[in-house]
Image 1 (spheres, one colour):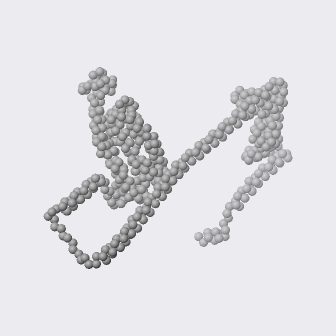
Image 2 (cartoon, rainbow, N blue to C red):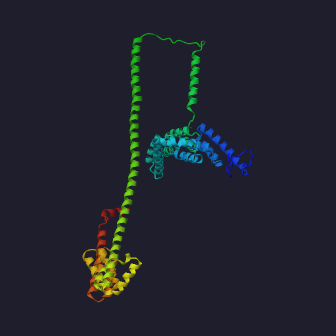
Length: 491
């Protein structure tokens, strides 16, 4: 044993010979760890696996460097089907003691058998899926999955517990009893198994017998020996039977016919049900396999659908980013073009290029340049934006028309053509609220004119259209017939 303070080898003294550290508590903890290890080893040898796990955990609490205790805990976990926990203990053990450690052989043997490790891994995933199906109320699917799991990993105690619990919930107590008896053979003192068995006994009123087969065979052997000794007793009086020998031929024929009839009946009542049961069992196994495969395939399909939806969303976002980047690049090109035309004194060309700029996509410096040029060539820019907006409307590009006309409106909000085309652009986009707002603005700007009258007419037509749609939707609802009214009056 080494000192936990300096790592020097300890002697029988209660103090470290090198650093003088008091190691009495360390030695007591080491002794307790060894004691609990020995108790865990004894319990593991008699298949008291739950008790062994408890004792070995206590041993590691007192001395986490107890390599034999950690390796044995991994073996016990492996025996109960908890392969992940077993590998965790062995990996920790190997990291603590890299050399001369049997845990390395355990890990290597398990890794070499890739098929077995893959089967165990699949059973653990399927168990988690079955547990989730239980929480979601899909108990039938979970039942099918657990049967297949136990066929592949017959030592998974948790699988026995969950399947037995489903049987108990469905009232199949005898099936639950048989499963729990298999689990008790793996771990004799598992508290969950014993608690479920007690519940089955209370529900059925029948006590579960957990006697080993060896004791039963032993008693049967003793009974056969007693019978044999009685037959070999020389003092035993044997009474020979006597009977009449008349009609032996006729009796033999009748006995033979009777035997044939009994044989045929035995074949019918024994072979036919067994054959039928075999066919049903094979069919059930196929249905179980197909159902389990369908559950796995359904989960895979759902995962693929989620991936497809995620990819489509990513593609849409990328397309939107590309479109925004294109508009931003075009805005900067038009801004540079406008600056060049402005410096050359070409005001109309500058205004035309500036009208194609989207100010919201410019950075701070670009926005400052745009604002300066817009204020300098206010009239020219307004004319260019107004023309571009009307052209976009005529080309049925209503989104672009709204952008251009809204910019023109910020320069001059009293131009009838700008307001009128903007209102109709919103109307074509289906934005009735903004369209009505523009028509009302025309009425306020030109109150006593034909323009205002035209705007009022559009608002009136829009209101009439909404009313007509409401009346039509109500007319399509099923009306109560006279018979329904009579039934309601009778009630």
